[in-house]
Length: 283
Ligand code: NDP
Image: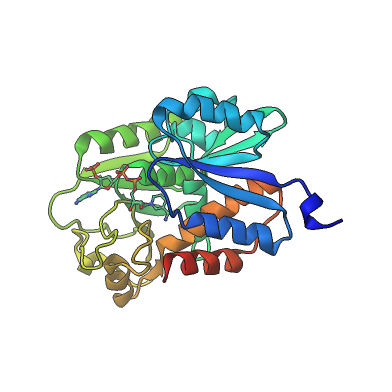
């Protein structure tokens, strides 16, 4: 049978203003590498059209779709159910068709965790997490579900930080505290993992995290959500002090891997996906 005779399965990405999304190349490289006659399609969807777009994807038999800003929260009422972490954090970035149902998952935190686990198992560990926005929230919830002992949220806005700490305490019974970020933050002794979950450094190689570098100790694991530049100043400074660094591209690749696993049931080749992503990003 020629490939033309195969019915292509469809997966999509619903977002607004994300033309040129480099993850398209990454996901399609995985499909091609594993001989799947699937397509991953970028779709511009306005907030007004979201409900119709979700119903359309369901009607057309899409196997699922990613959704990014501004749809991560507003998509929820249009779905048939939520996975565990998506329900806790109240945000969805990956929708999966299971039977006749569209189920919302969140792969951002899961992707981060997979990337982190190449260096350290977070179970029983103490974590400092800068930020309390969408990415930090996804990471904190997934760390909590993975059995992290203690999380200190360091955030500039008290309100956003307090909301995240309350969620971690109330829904996951986690030992969580908030430090309102002002001046250079000194990482407490005994911290195992330090994460930049803010957008500081994105497209800004010189941007500096307000952090007392002398508190960073050899052997600590440091991770950044920022993926452009791949090697941020935070990671370079920490590595220079003997910390083990994990870049944000690993998180992006791994959230793609989790999505492909959800949609297709196969575990895609990580190296193929990272190479395609790097090529699409020109790094
Ligand atoms: P949000 O806008 O939801 O949150 C931004 C966070 O950064 C907030 O905690 C904000 O603090 C903090 N912040 C921003 N600027 C400053 C500053 N100058 N000083 C102190 N704090 C600051 O963004 P997201 O959480 O969605 O995204 C954050 C980053 O994560 C982005 O760079 C994004 O590209 C990246 N990301 C990476 C992914 C990956 O796969 N690698 C996946 C998803 C996101 P405050 O609350 O005080 O405003």
